Image (tube, rainbow, N blue to C red; front, side, top):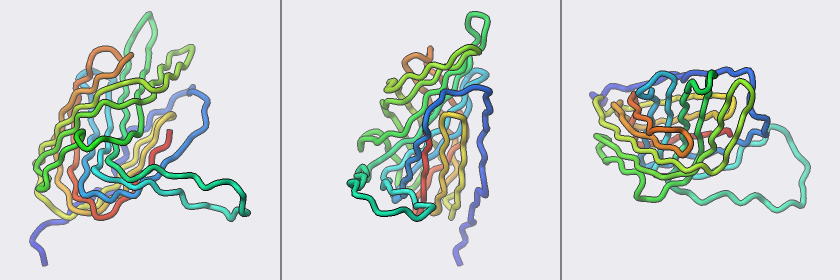
Length: 228
């Protein structure tokens, strides 16, 4: 028997933000088989009240089709072609601000493939670094209106520094807002980590400094879903 202790995160439910009004749109969910070899997660707060961030980054995921819940008659439509396996990042950042006598909530979120240079994680899971320029959706909500902008450019810079021992790990994360939701189920070996970072988004004002808890993982099996 190994002397390493097993770690189990039974269910980390990140804040569920309920709003009285949201942009009307059809939800679309993407599913990915996490094939590793390594990945990292951060859930944290910004350097000012009303900011929070979440990011899941993996060196390799494989898009998969959702399992059908009901039997369907065959059709003549061409099958949907899934993207090829790649490194990937699912992310969201939220910032509140008081402007012109009202509160404004801005949320920037997305699900993007990464190039090989954007994510680097040590094989020992001692540390990790993400530096990626990606496009996301920016939703701006006020008391009177909701404005949604597509393909908004931003830069996500995160550093992970492990402080826990390497151990068997089972992870379960869920995060949901009206516009973005993600779920991750993953097993393998992992190390808890401290995280710091800077997120800079066009249209969200000054760069947001973030800090929080995270995880570095050597993935054995996993499933990631992202709903936008």
